[in-house]
Image (tube, rainbow, N blue to C red; front, side):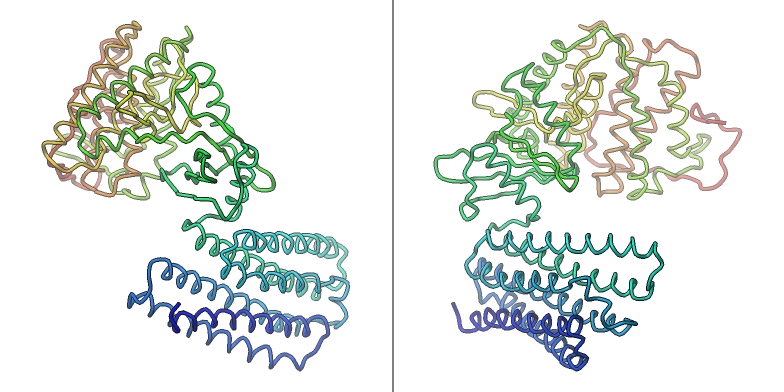
Length: 573
């Protein structure tokens, strides 16, 4: 360790000591009512602020001048983060002095036993340097336990204050007491974040303490090793589900497992669906090793079998065309087999327009001009998407799938693991699985192929072929099932997926293309419905499944009041 590095390390140790002195002064002001400590407190906090700025500047210089290796750079970044939170703790404690001046009765706080808060704060400050210097995850976890105890102390006193407010006794003192315990509780939040930064340094992954505790509980329940110092955690499969997903390795000889942490209702549904799919098609989905239900919060955790295969999407992106098509065919054949096994002679409505409406606000955030666009193109009127959806929704009420199957619910390329050598396919992320219309799975898959970020003209032409091949497979399945309204429902499903996919697209010209394809399908459906034609006769151009090599710009739209004389099948008027 270089002298300069050692200096920064010692600087952190000194900073922790100074913040402890700040806490001692704040305690004396509140509990001993020692007004003479106010100046000392102010001076100490000013010194802490200066030391934090100096330490962070030194750490930044060492990182930017590349005088340290990757691990040392991470250490310096973590020290800087810890310093900023120590700075915040000092400021929170300084606020206590200002609040104390509002007290009408010096003895008022005695019954609130604030000493308990300070004992926890001293305990937490005493853990920081040892946890970081020893790389001790268990000590970092104890920082989170300090925060939990401070929360409990706050909750108890908060309830008492609210009760006393109802008795209308000393309201000014009660407001002051509430602010004081709030600042003390907030120091616990800072200690928790420091613990999480230390875990980040040790594991090399940003992981919340709540997630880490759920991971430990899940590993223990699954019979895996739970020695914190020997865990290897790697985040994978980023998505928009709100779940944290990672591969966890423990001791040598033990197979890694998949850790999933997120909203309890999602993971509870996924567990139930995994159990159902395993009973109907063993080996198709990962095995459940353990489930950690939600406790105080709203988060739960799943420990699953880790399947070390690649996502099918990666074969498309890597241009391994033969293997990509092989995997796609296997995925389609597998899901079709599952549909056949779960088929029930009961009609069902997928309500694609309702699904699109529920995501409309998200699409509006990125592309309000595309969603709310109205005007005219020549004699053709262009209506805002919400008005077009409202009309299309009325006609969809006449459409139902002639049978029900168990669908995947999010059947896209990234939720399929493929081993081309065996060959074998596995399905992931089943929390949306339900009894519904198989068109939901087909339409999601088709658009997941089309929206892949591939720029080469030749490869995009190949993608078009892959999408058309998947559509032909779906055509054959519908014919086998005698599904006469398949194409109309597929148009509704594709329009929904085109619109909702704009949430993932950062290129406006491509988003415009997807919105225009959704418009085309909805307008065609509305026109068909207005004419009162049989849905079995509905057809749409398969060009909507093509992947253009040069995404065109939107045609110009004249803004303002629509031309009332123009012909437009989607005119809601």
